[in-house]
Structures are given as C-alpha cells and as structure tokens.
Length: 377
Image (cartoon, rainbow, N blue to C red; front, top):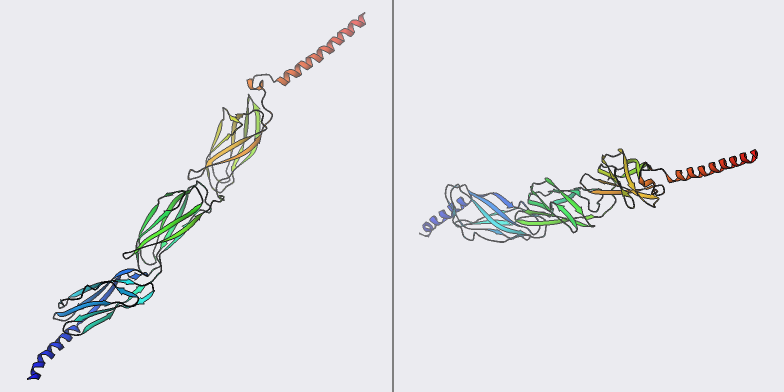
C-alpha cells in the first residue's frame, strides 16, 4: 500500500523536474552595458520555457556578489511560466569602486523541482570619455576674440549619452556658453567650438557632462589664459616719409607696409596731438593691406613749436578687433604767421632781403652821384 501511495508523488516530482529542465536563460543584459565604479544599473535576465506545459516558479532572485550589490528583490513570489513563453526578470544593482568582470548569480526556484542557477556577467570599467583642446590660438590677447575648438571622444566599450560641454571663467565673454553633442558610441568622437574674448588672465574651465545609463557624471579640463604677443597679427611699418610746408599747413606723405602674417583691414592714417589734422586730408583711408602689401598715404595737419609729431595708423583684424600703432615724423620749425595767411603771401625773409638789397643799392648810387658832383667841381 505504501509503495502504491508513493508512486504518484514520485511521478509528479519527476514530471516537475523534467519540465523545469526545459526552462533556460536565453540572454542577460545590463544597462548601461559597461558600468563605471559606483554606478547603478539595471540587469535583465531573459528566461524561456520550451516545455509543452506551464512550469511553476516560486521565486526569482539575483544574489549580491562582493563587487556588485543587488538593490532590490522584486520576485519573492512568482506564478508560472506558460508553455513556449518568455519572461524578463529585472533587478537594480550597484557597482563597487573596483573594476573588472563580476558575476552575481541569478537563481530561479521552481515549485515542483530544484532551481536554475545562472551567473550574470557585469563589467565595471573606470575609463572616462576624453575632452581635448583640438584647436586654439597660438597666443591670447586682451579684448581680442578667438576661437577654441574642443573634441570629446568615447574610448569606452559602451555608449555614453547626453554629452555636453559647458564653458566657464571670469572676466571674459563666451559664445556659446555651452554646447550639446548628444550620444557617443564606442570609439566615436564629436566636436564643438567656442568664441572667447578675455579681458583678464585666468583659467578657462571646460566641464564635460554625460550620462552612463541613468548615472550623471562630469569632469573638468582647464585651459590657462595667459596673454602674450600675437606673432601672426598684422604689423604696419611706415617708410619713405616726406614732410613739406605749404599754404599754412604741413603735408606728410609716404608708404605703409603690412609686415605681419594676417590681413590688416580698414587701415586709416592720421596725425595725433600736438598736431591738428586739417583739410584736405585730415585722415587717409588705405582700406585693406594683405601680408607684404604696400600702399601710399597723404595727410595734412598744422602744428606749432614742435620738431616732431605722431603719425597714427589704426586698423582692424578679421574679427573686428581694433589695433593702433604710432610712428614719429620730424617737421621743420613752426610755420610763420605770414606763411599762414595763404599760399599767395610773400615770405617775410624775402621781404627783408629785398629791403637790405635796396638800401645797399641806394647807398652805392648815392656815393657814386656824390663822387661825380665832386669831380665836376
């Protein structure tokens, strides 16, 4: 009788184990695919019942491994997996600060049989996306606008999302203040540019922000802004200067040459104090000078009691920044009041010379006349 009673029980157990043996893990996925130390992630285990009958399940658990902590256990009780059905079991985990491959164990407990155990691979890698300065000026100049280009690359084995770069610093103008790059797949890179106009020396801070899964992360790269001479900018040299006095004013003409490596735009030449620019050429526009280009100029001015005056050359670069350089030119003694009356006035020195000659001539004539009178007597 006992033997007959145990037969159905043994048959049920055998049948349960046979059906449980038809349940298998098809796939495991971790989001993000590669964790960084301290990241939280979602682990999904996909299980399929290939049997022709339902398989009763009591629970599904993922057990904490030393370097991967399981944060929840949502499947303390479970029903059954129908014939041919697929079920996804998801768990939240958190990585420790260690790096490497770790294997928390997934355990599916069957109601009428034993259990299914499956190690789930979880990769933790601390490699970060990289931010590099791919293009910058050779030198920074106060109040000059320059372009800085940055590149963000992803050397990780998994993608990163929501990538953006935020620029910050004191005493400068920034356009734009931030740039969005988006998602970067493994070994992919993206670029963005910023226009900066520094007014003081300081540290320019690039903050790289990104997400690894749901984990928000950031890193900073600093670019020191130190002012120095611009070795490429336009340099205007004055040569062949001639100064002449005419009609109550001075006229100065000569040549200007761009000896720099960049174009000089909107070149204008005039005179500075103590000289006073006057018509007809108060200022002389030259327009643009390419590197090694030469142009002549002609400006007019008045000045009193000076031996030299400044020649002022102003120009702009391609970004509209204004530059100024000065060259001193010598002048003759100040124009006389008679000379300032106009170009038709007779020079004072010439008048004096004529009067002296007239007096001498009169004296000679008078002596000759007097001598002739004496001879007649």
